[in-house]
Image (cartoon, rainbow, N blue to C red; front, side, top):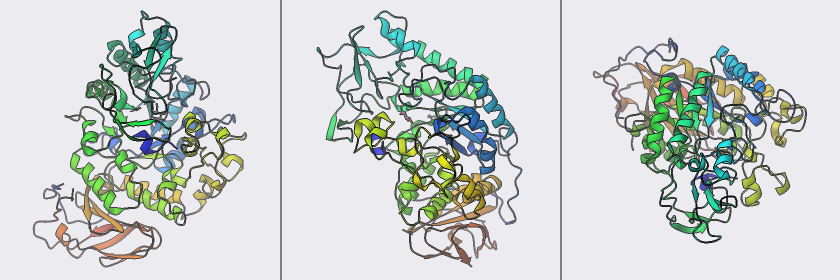
Length: 586
Ligand code: NOJ
C-alpha cells in the first residue's frame, strides 16, 4: 500500500472566563455561517471525505455516483456531518481514479452530470451539508486540452503551461528527480523531442505555476465552482506546485523505496516558498465566497505545517495535520506531544485519522482482538479535540482494509508496479458497507473493488440497530460535540501528562469544563484526577458518554481496556481566582 513512508515521505487565558455555574451545556448553535462567537462555519463543522467511486451506486453499474451521494445526505445528517469533501469527480481518463483531470468544469459521465451535481448540492443544502471539491492544482491529465496543445509543438499557446526541458544528453532525463509513483519524473515526448515533468504518473503532467496563465485559469475554475454553490476546496498535493527552475539533481539518500527507486531529499521539487503566493491568491478568492481551503499538507515538522496557515492567517484555513494522522500507535505520549505542538502553533488544528491513500485507521490502530473498542476509542479521541475533524467514509462503521490478494486484481497502478511489497491503495477504497446483503448493499453487480469478507456486522443497517455499535458511538460523540460548546471550541488542557496508558485532557469554555479520559491500553486502569492545579477543587465528574462501563467514584475513574470516559466537571469553586490552567507541555 502507498504508505506514509512513500507519500512522504496555552497558556490558557482563563482568567477572563466566567466560571461557577456548572449546569447543562445549552447552546444557541450556529447562526448562519458564523456562530455566536463569530467563528466561521468551517471551524465547527465536521467534515466527511467521500471517495465517489465507492460511496453509493444509484444505477447499479458497480461504481458510485452523485445521485447515490445525494441519496445519502439524510444518512450523513443523522451521523452529524456538516460538510462533505468529494475526491475528484471531474471528467478523467481515471488513470489515477480522478486525480488526472481532463476538464475542471464538468462531471465525469461515470458519476453523472452537472445537473446531478446541482441536485446533490441542493439536497445537501436541505440537510445543512456543504460540499467541497478536490482541486487537483499540481497537474492535469495528459488528455486535458491544455496538455494536448502544449504537447503539439514547441511554439504552442499552452507550451509553457507545463514543464518541458531537453534531456541532459540523448536518452537522459533533465535530472535525477523520481516520481512518487515510480521511475523517473520525466517522460520523453517524441513529437517535440523534449521531456515533460510529472511528479505522479506520466499521465499526470505537472502544471507550470510560473506561467501567469495557469494561475488565472485555476482561479477561474474555483470562481466557477463557487458560483455553483461549492463551499470550498481540498487542494491536492499543494507542496508540489513549484520546482526550482535550475532543475538541479536532488541529493540522494541511502536506501530504496518499495517501488525500487532511490530515496531523495526532494530539495528542489517540494515545498518551495513560491507556493505561498499562490495560496494567498486562492484564499482571497475563497474569502469572497465564504469558502474554506483544506490542504493536503504532508509535513515532517510543525514549523512546516504552520507555514501553510500563512504568516497572517491568509493562506489555508485547514491544512491537514498528517503528523497526527500517522502517529500509528496507541501512545498517549506521542499523541500528547503532537496535540501540544499544534496547539502551540496558533493555527486551528485539522485532525484526520485516515483517507483514500492510507491504510484504514481500523487496521492501523486495531490490535486484532479489540478492534471495535479501539475504533470507538479513536473516534471519541479525535472528535473531542479542539479543531476540525475530517472523517473518512466507512470509518464510522469500522470498515477495514481489503487489500488485493493477487497482482491481477490490483486496480491502483502503484500496486501493480510495486507488487508485492507495495499493494497499492485499493484496500482502503472499497465500497461503503450499507447492509448485510450481497456486495454490502452497495451495488447489485460486482463493484469495481470487492468488499471485505468481514463486511456483515460492519455495515450501516446492522450497526444502526445495535446501541453499542461503532456507528452509534460516532453519532453520540458528534451529537455531544455539536451540543457542547466546551467540546466544540473550548481550550484543550492536557492533564495527567505522565500517564503512559491513559490519555486525558480537559476541554474548557466559558464556565463549562469537560474531562476526556481514554484508556489506550489493553489492561484495566484506575486514574485519579487532581484538578486543583487547574483551579478545580473537589471536582464531581458527571458522565456524558462512556464505553465499556467506564465509571467514576469521586475523582477516580475506572477504565476497562480501551474504554472511553467523557464527563462534565462540576466543582465547588473555592479558589479565589477561579480556574487556572498551566501551559500544555510542548
Ligand atoms: C494525492 C491524492 O490524495 C492521491 O490519491 C493522488 O494519487 C495524488 N495526490 C496525485 O494527485
